[in-house]
Length: 323
Image (cartoon, rainbow, N blue to C red):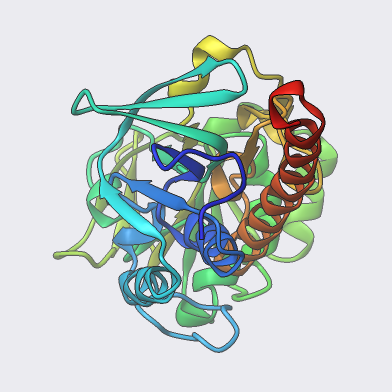
């Protein structure tokens, strides 16, 4: 079924990003009988992890399995897919034009941005190579699997202070490598030590281990500190550069994590036809949070298009040409 007053050359919605948030939005839009295209570059943030955790009904599922099932489910409702990256999004009256990296362009009435982020890790040898296996970022996602082991928290931003306190919930053997925080506030240091968190101020210079395993962190003073896993936070880099020409409103995420698209509770940005969901607006979102945000955005897009369809039908009926 074509949407009212929507030419076949124009999509009702284009979803940019085919991870948990994007596929959830596409599923809702497909079930609402909207002509929907998902454009996906095939690099979900959690592709480095072997399993997802804390995802109700999918505990322990490999992330790429969820993506495959999600694509099949959305595809069953007529959602189309294109493997590509988006180069730029521009306005054309009441339509948006999505230009792909292969030079092709698609027109749409609405966009859901679910393109995610990249984690820009500290340039410490051995760190990036173990990302998603023994170098971790989310204790809710991975804490249970490394519980009661000797866990390192490698500070990278002010948020690392809270991360160290969080990791203590899963183990009483926690060491904070605090160089990335500078000099610790005396009260914060006292609080950390009150629950047995060890503090190492010398900068980490290498993560050591066999294969993907971690056995130690070497610091600038030459000491090797034995650890079994490392928690750290990379600088989140949102994949939203293709929106740069539209001047969308942005907000600074707390704890110095950077600038992100501003979106309301439904995911709607400052542009009336663009929504955003998942890590591209909230780097702290887990998979189930992203799924919920995507579903909300998809439903919100359909709701706005429903109202527009009625308005356009009424205008067409009242126009002189229709009499």
